[in-house]
Image 1 (cartoon, protein in one colour):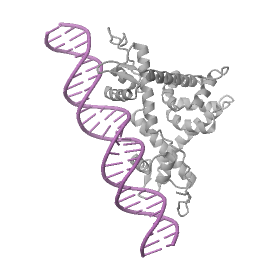
Image 2 (cartoon, protein in one colour; image 1 turned 30 degrees about the horizontal axis):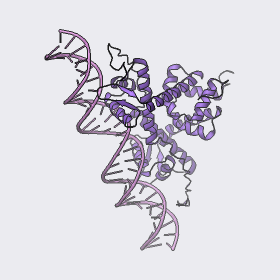
Image 3 (cartoon, chains in turn brown, yellow, orange, purple; image 1 turned 45 degrees about the vertical axis):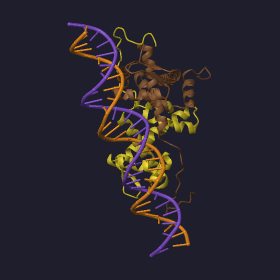
Length: 151
Length: 151
DNA sequence: TCCATGTTGTAGCAATGGCTACAATATATT
DNA sequence: AATATATTGTAGCCATTGCTACAACATGGA
């Protein structure tokens, strides 16, 4: 219990730094965000979101997409009927828009630093999930220094 | 539901954007980096890296750490004997230092934007894996702007 | 209508990464 | 030395997320 653990000549420091790694739940949330963001984009762009299109866009097989959609359905983020296209619920649409916003802010910020657009977009895709509110606000402020904050 | 549900003609756009999601291999690489970085830190700080300390730092059980260490061993990043502490191979040490460097640059950059230190460090932990060479260089340049101008 | 083709769904394999429970080993204390 | 405690290892569970192979469905064209 106490930190007087033992070790002959070795101290037992080990300051617990709470989860450097993404937890299970966090990772599931990232996946959900990627999916709903893409679904929203497909609907906005082409009028509908189909399993095959999602698979192409996400770079995975339709099987993986199918299974993930079932999970999102259970989580109340999408509605989907067999052999039909996928729709966002209100919650799904909200998450989709939030993700899209974060993605855009991060990408714009990177571009403002001189990072090429394509690279900025690609990096932002990964980074957006790890950017805290504070950091996102710092990015937004850097983009438009005259304004107060980003909602 | 939506009137545009079934595609009447052939709006099959779907520009393949190659993997928005992290691939399997990429994710394994991130885990490896987190582990070797932490192992390097523990060795530098306390003289050795033990399974239990790693578990505490990473916020997982010793079982998870143990299994991951075996994978890192197979990948040639660490050496480990039963009931003994863990050592980095040359490759592991190199990866550890690279990760630490990236982590530091990202954290310093965020701090330079006014993000509180603790938040900067936490965000950097997740972001470092998604920062391309170009973006990292943009961060570094932002940190020391006079470097390439004076010649 | 029937068939070809494309799309979607299902079955089942593998690897990762989390866990609990328990066994084995190492170390410290008595 | 014996024992108590801490550390490490093993067995086996579950969920996620990738895959291939195959089955079922939908739709357009002959």
